[in-house]
Length: 316
Image (cartoon, rainbow, N blue to C red; front, side, top):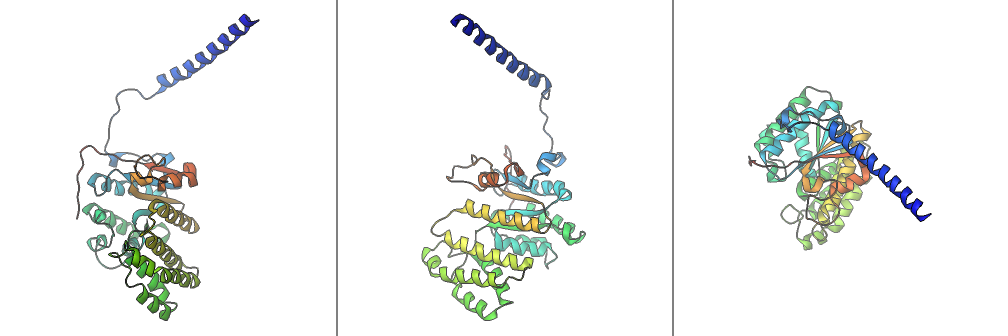
């Protein structure tokens, strides 16, 4: 009996092994043949799998690198006609709101607009080229097809604070003036000062409540409410920096706002370390934006990562 069982087990094991061999042999014969050939990224096509993503992230191995920054424009040019008209940046919310105002027809030049970015690493000639192209696109397309930029970082309080206060001033000028005075000491230069962050805590909460109470259902009101929320995130960073979680929460808001206005696809620009789905492209502990996004949107969140061999920095 034992001998028969042993023979039967050997037969089953052999069948399984042969089946596995057949599958691997089939893959080996059908795999792409020959030596891989590199092509210029500008000539590459974005696959349907990537282009159908609800959220598609373009990661860069290093900030401020010419080749990676040039890829931003190339990817956007390939995707805008496929519904990617919202671009989320690893950048300050208030600063990007000012850049976006220029993209929608505001005064000045692309060189003026690039100076509005919060991070110096984005103030490059490549970003000027990107802004110039987006402005030209927007000038020739209806509002529903125009590209908009949104910042998802809680990086600097000054511009974000002013956005919320300016909105409140149109609804309650006295409250806006009072809160502006109480928040005057909370600036880009003092955001890491825990004493200042503690002193303005009450005013930040009041600002958020006042802006929320003034909500009239418009996009401008939603933007002001988000600015107040990001201002609170920025204040919290002085004592408990959880930047990736904050950026994920803000990206979720961007995606939801876009969906509410018929914008079904969002493109994200940021560092590989933040955008990687598995959280393996960084040594920073905790869940990354990309890991949280993969948990929330599943296969609807996809990433194009980059790396470089010979690259250059091209700052303006």
